[in-house]
Amino acid sequence: MRYSDAFLKEILRRTRVIAVVGVSLNPVRPSYYVARYLSQRGFRVIGVNPGHAGAQLFGETVRSSIAELPPEVDMLDLFRRSEAVGPLVDEALEHLPGLRTVWMQIGVENAEAAARAESRGIDVVMNRCPKIEYQRLHGELRMGGFNTGVISSKL
Image 1: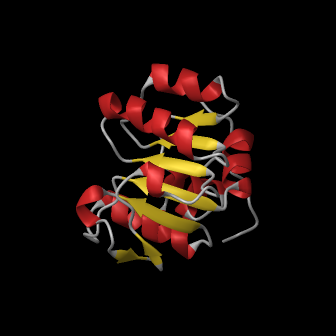
Image 2 (image 1 turned 90 degrees about the vertical axis):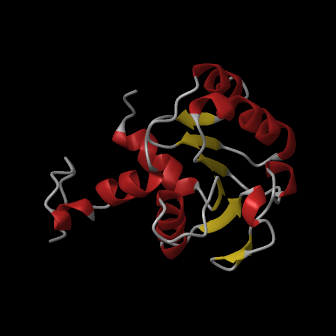
């Protein structure tokens, strides 16, 4: 899918509380370092993983399910297989009144779940990583030699 930079930037600008579904406590796992990076950028990040429920991660208690999340969660970041996304999106639609974005990680796409969320006015991003997009849109990837396509005065 192709998303405009303006669309992605607006999502990242307005987002305050991110639930990372499928988060790991293992620092070498992508879900951990994405959650860590986002928390370092000022987002409140709450992990969801029944295997780690009750553990502390970035100042928050890991929850066992979406239903246990506080209502102010406004973005769901899904580290789950594409076929597992449907029920998670449905649970979020039922339990998260402040939800504004469903973000499916790289390799994760579920058009049916996306359509259900979009029909409720929720923005959906599939097959992308919010960490990478944040870095790209804020010029941080340039330091690693990547052409971000974003013109900036930052060196």
